Length: 79
Image 1 (cartoon, rainbow, N blue to C red):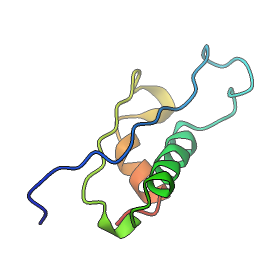
Image 2: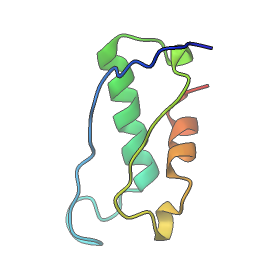
Image 3: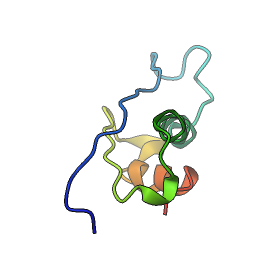
């Protein structure tokens, strides 16, 4: 267990009004897993080195449920 925390990157996904525009058919899990994979790629670390993922969600409801962070972890290929 690593005893010090390291912030390797900070990214966000795009947003728009609900059910409108180019992102209307995009699933939240796919959007956030893309953000996580991009962050890992940009930082140069290995996915296996990530111990924790902190994820914020402005409106955790509907299709997102309350498991967005957990689902994104699996879709991003994190251990």
